[in-house]
Each structure stands twice: as C-alpha cells, then as structure tokens.
Image 1 (tube, rainbow, N blue to C red):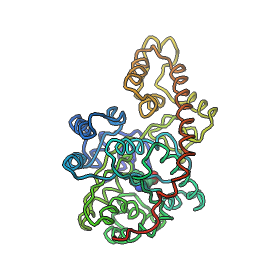
Image 2: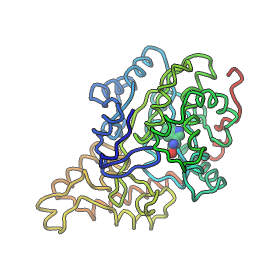
Image 3: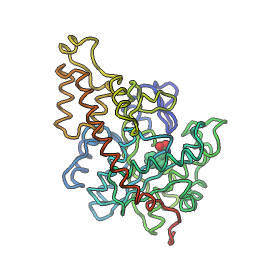
Length: 385
Ligand code: TRP
C-alpha cells in the first residue's frame, strides 16, 4: 500500500503529520472506506438509537470493515474495543477523541476495552525523553483516560514495559511475519532509525489478537484511532489471517487542527501553544484560546457584514470535537460565526468557560480512578494462551 508520495502536499504517518491534509485524498491513498450516512444509521441502530457527536459531525470519517463488525454484534458476536496512547507528555484535548468514542461504545454496548500505553515507543521515537519520563507520563495519561468514565471491570491496560511478559508471546509470532522492507516502506524509516521502532509495530498489533488468544476463540476487534495510526493496522490486517485471527476493524478520525492553525494539534517540533494540555492552569488555557487561530475577519465591521469561516478555525474545531455537547449548541456557534452575529472574542470567552468546567470535572474524576488504575494493568499472560 503506497503512503502519501512526496508529490502530495501533505504527509500523514504515525511518526509525521504535516501540510494541509486533503482527507478525501488521504482515504484514497490509504485505501479505506468512507463513513456513509447508511453506515451511521447502522451504528445508530446497533447502539439502540443514538449517535455520538464525533460520528454525527463527521470527525470519524473513514473506516475498515465496520459494517460486518456491527452486523456480527447484532447477531450475537460481541467485539472488544482497542485504542492507545504514546506517552510523550501530558494529554491534550485532541488525544481524547479516540477514548471518548470508546467510552461511548462501552457504555452503550457493555463491551470490553483494551488500552495500550506505549512508553517504549515514545522512548524510541523521541530523542529527548528518558525511559523514566515516558513511564511517568504513561501513568499520568492513563489516569486521565480512565477518568473519562471507563468501566473498571471491563477495562484492561497493556502498559508496554510493564506488560511485556503478556505481550511478548504474540509479539514474537507477529514479528516473524513482518519484513524489514515492509516497515521501511510503510513508516518511512531511515538507515538511522533505531531497531526498537523497527520492531515496535509488532507490539501495537498484539492487543488486536490478545482476547482471541486468551479465550481460544475468534473475538472481533474495533479500533477507534486517528487516521495517522492506520499504517500500523494495515500491517496487522495483512498478517492476521495467517496467524488464524480475525482482521481488526477500524474507525478513523481526522486530525484535530492545532491552535496555531496547523493541520494537527501536535506539539512535536512545535510550540506548546499549539495545544490545550489537560494540566494547563486556567490562566494558560485562557491565553492559548485568546491567541488561537480563527477564521475571523480583519475588522469587527467586516465580520458583522460578511461573517467568518468556521471550517478553518481552531476554536470552532474545539467546539466541534468536545465542547459543544448538544447539537443545538453546536448549530448556534456555527451559524453565529457564519452569519457574523457571534464575534471571535465572545466565542472564545464562552469556550474558555467550558474548558475550565471540563478541567475541574476531569481533575476530580482523575483522583478517583487512582484507587483502581493499577489493577487494570495486565502483567502476566493468560493461563490458557
Ligand atoms: N502509536 C500510538 C501513539 O503514538 C499509540 C497506540 C498504541 C495506539 N496502540 C494504539 C493508538 C491503538 C491508536 C490505537 O500514540
């Protein structure tokens, strides 16, 4: 499968996102399927008549085999959810996009969730971090993820350096099927890439197969993730059947634009002002939002007359992905912006209030999960595996 060629104006891989991303083109390049209204109707039906805003607002826009997975569920074949986080620092709001959707599916369908915390990957991929730091961020990130409302009884964590004895038997089998030329082409590795990263994709595949291995029967997997992670799972899907496991299904989200107007809310090689970190104090949140890139006009008079452009605005992206909880609020913000009735300063003030409220709630929920977070970490292989 070819990755975006150098002639494209953008690059999307697990290790690099840059340029203005043409999402329709990216879907073609990756060879994934489009999330259509019919598919959304199927999700709506499967969960008993509801649709998460991340789905109805088009942030999850691409998938692989979601239809058959949902049909299977309706016919008595439950699946499990899997997503992950590379702990390179504190979480920012766009990291919650995958976990929000997972938590929603878990609540609606009562399915198990597997979370992978890849402290090893981030040590290998980021020259500036020590293993102690990636492990520390791993625990901090895990608290925030669990605090979104995951069910303690149905949520399991692979914390790579701590779960390696559980992961390794399957990683060995996966790694035997992945060639160097595949990872070189898929991830764009260079001669100077360390061999940790060359092996790493085997570890990211393991959770897809783990429940099937542990239970000795085929258990389908659904992975909500950013589209940048798709290359890993193309490799996984290509080798799944050879190992006797089902191919994981995927639901891909667009990248959430950064506050400085970049394609993604990443702070890799970028200013910390590009993202809203969950541990930013209220004053910092306020400053970042106030400086955030918008689709506003040069003058108030012009904006009142011509309206602004929500689609290019980093503040609108925050409303869209998290802070406009109801469709009504989202429509009010969007239409107010487009018509010129709602000016950027007022829109930002409203958003800042919502961010503060969410952070206060998150801080409390985070303290509560600390009593059980440790127990979710898998530290030994399954007895039957
Ligand atoms: N590689 C991901 C990252 O850098 C972490 C990850 C591990 C992940 N397993 C995953 C992401 C499954 C999405 C789905 O953040």
